[in-house]
Image 1: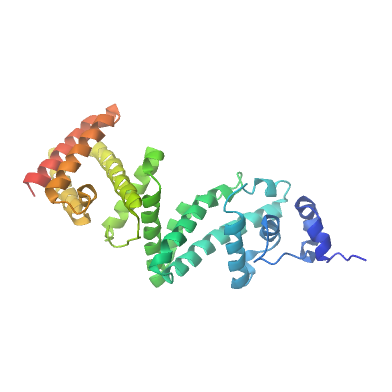
Image 2 (image 1 turned 90 degrees about the vertical axis):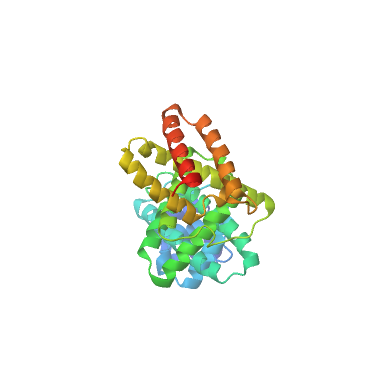
Length: 316
């Protein structure tokens, strides 16, 4: 005779049937080993258990298995079909918990990984960070994982905060080494540029966090750096155009100092070129940016690039 606790019985039932009766009998269901669970088994864990109350070993096994089983393929829309409000709320809570657990666990692990293994590790985490948005049920009100990362770092303290900031910077550098930004919308490039500027204003060095790259990746990073400078300066030019002469002078004093301090021109030098070669490359790129700028941005860009170039070459 097969009892209600039989692993065979619950394993043989389709997931939809299990979820349909789980409101009455979920505590009798034998869940699969989290380290061996397939997609259906992981979904059972997500909707039937409060993962924040499980032991760290179980949480880590589920997270590792999530990255294996849900690294590609369908999202969780099918799993949430027919869920009660109670189970849907648990699914959302567990996803939020796993996202934060994933972030701080991988941050901690990154600190103990050798330089040679960092690239593969970062590539895996970047891919899964992008995947999180696809895994979230389409009708969920969860915020974007990248916005949540900002909140998690802001609420952390001490060594954990420092490790998290360094990990994000390393991941951003790796992202820029491997994903040409010309395939992304202008708004995304500006958002990335503003994030980097915020870090630079807080004292981050462009050379402070390095991730090894081959020649092709280094070239992608350099091209992306130029696109980010273009996005940033285009946005800055809109404000520059509206400034009084007195404000423009103060603005140029600040920005020229920052451009030099941050090593922005190094992006244009390429291969350790001189300041003159960097300025020449910057001027050539500026001309390209002006030509392809939207009509409403062209005047401001021309004015800003002219004044910045003059100050870099002849003054201040």
